[in-house]
Length: 210
Image 1: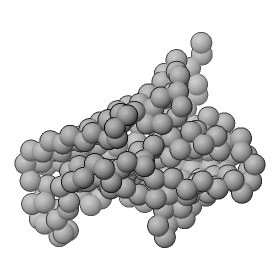
Image 2: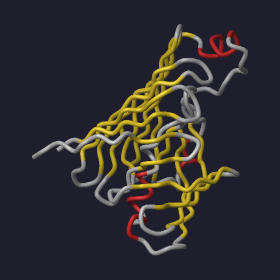
Image 3: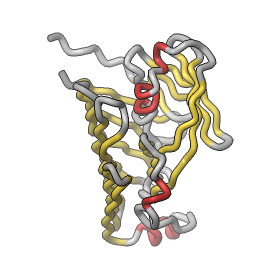
Image 4: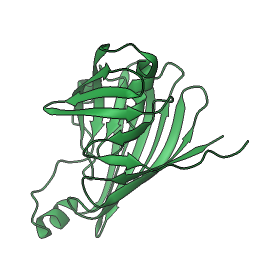
């Protein structure tokens, strides 16, 4: 049965609502709302296979006078990335006093070759992908894993290859490192984030009755 998850952002004004379908692998779609660096809406749809590796991710962002989209699909030969854009995000950023951003997508998809997971900026859902794939919810303390992810920046939807480190810290706790950023994630028994320091807290929503 699908499950609703809702996070309130703690780093800015914003929220995320995801609907998760736990079959073989993972399928989820969700919406983010935030005001930093400018007000935007972000909609996404992600699927992962039974092995935990991400199969596809589609993302759309939209604000006043602009919209962007990116789709990532992983196949035997690597990642295929397609993009779309309307309006002028850079003009909206400059009007708000921010520098322009990168183009959506990635110039060379081969840079993502080693990525089995995807990450979406500002989302508390996507840490679940490597946490589950690596079996960290039940792993012993100090089990460390270094992974490459296809990291989608928001709201630009620029895609970069990012290196992240996940460390099992015991029941319900996973260490997360990305460049100089470090956090101790609080997760439930399904590997879903409850508390992400400096980003988001999950609301307690009763599970539906079968």
